[in-house]
Structure formats: C-alpha cells, structure tokens
Amino acid sequence: MRNLAGSKLVLATHNKGKLEEIRLLLAPMQIEVVSAGELGLAEPAETENSFVGNARIKAHAAASATGLPSLADDSGLCVAALGGAPGVYTADWAETPSGRQFDIAMARVWAELQASGTSAPYRAAFHCTLVMAWPDGHDEVFEGVVEGEIVWPMRGEAGHGYDPIFRPDGHDITFGEMDWALKNRISHRADAFRKLLAGCFT
Picture 1 (cartoon, rainbow, N blue to C red):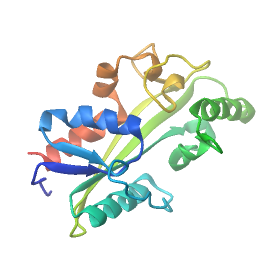
Picture 2 (cartoon, one colour; picture 1 turned 135 degrees about the horizontal axis):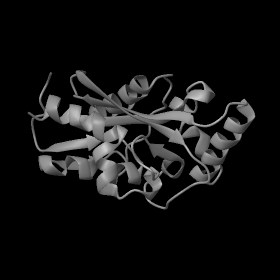
Picture 3 (cartoon, one colour; picture 1 turned 90 degrees about the horizontal axis):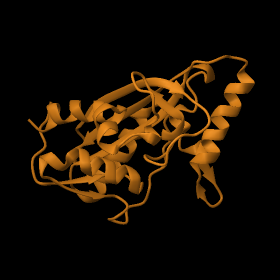
Picture 4 (tube, rainbow, N blue to C red; picture 1 turned 135 degrees about the vertical axis):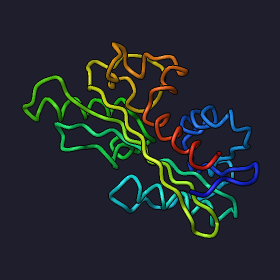
C-alpha cells in the first residue's frame, strides 16, 4: 500500500456536491484538495462497465494531466429488483438536454420497480469505489457499500443524487432527510474513505 506524500491532491470530478462532501471527509488530513473542474481539465469518457474501471479512467487522466496524485470516485445506486440497475449508469439516468435532473432519475427508478412486478421491500445498495492514482501509473483501490431500501415518495431536501429515495438500514429516514454529519459517518463513501485513510494516510 502506497502512502500519499505531499500536501496537495487532485479530485477527479466536476461534480460540486461530490467535491464538497469529499473535502469534508478529507478535512482531518489537512491536505489541499483541488478538483479537475476547478483546474479546467476535460472530463474523460467513462467507457468501462464497472465502478472500478471508470474510477481508474478518471484518476489516471487527472494524475497524468497534473503530475499530482489524483483521487477519483465512481459510485452508484444498485437496485436488486432491477438487476443492479442503474449501477454504473446512475448519473446517466439523470441526464437531460438541460443537465442532470435527479428527480427524473428517481421517478424512473420507481416506475421501473412498479413495472417489474416485484413487491416491497425494494432492496438496494449504494456502492462507492475510490481509486488513488499517481503520475507514475500506480494506483490503490478502496470500495465501500451501504445497504438499504428504496422508498417513495421522495423525502428530504438534503444530500444529492438519489438520496431522497434511499433509506439506509437501521434508520427510519432517507439520506435526503439526514444531517450531513450523520450521512458522512454511515454512507458508502464514508465506508470507502475509512479504508482509503487507513491505507494511504498512515
């Protein structure tokens, strides 16, 4: 396992919500986090059919472009009754000509669940894969998961993405209703980050 040296890290994302969440998770490390979007880097095509494959594409592209260690996150919602969909296409389900609209994506999840002929509880899991890449081509991989259920209607204004329809196990509120501090302790991203911090920041 390779430790991170230096005080600056590139986060390979153009997603402001993800940037804010990851900056909070890395705050105890006292490391400067700058995003690919802030640096004006192009978004590479995510051509793989797995979270780890797409995270590797993004991390290595940013590391190569900047000469700095780079961290990429590829994550998504996997719904059991939909065969694991939307999975790696989680963000794609929200794409519209005017940008990403996750209310449309959440409505699609619910519509497809109703069309599937299955009944509640609708088991689902959020998956997060982190890839830390270095300019020399080395990388480390960390994966996190949080299990739960899909609920309807949408609940809560907090969080982002599909948070308003996902209720994690052991809780009676959705990620969309949850205080960010609690979510950042129990989420799939928090799970992956605990492993990242233990592996690369010790």
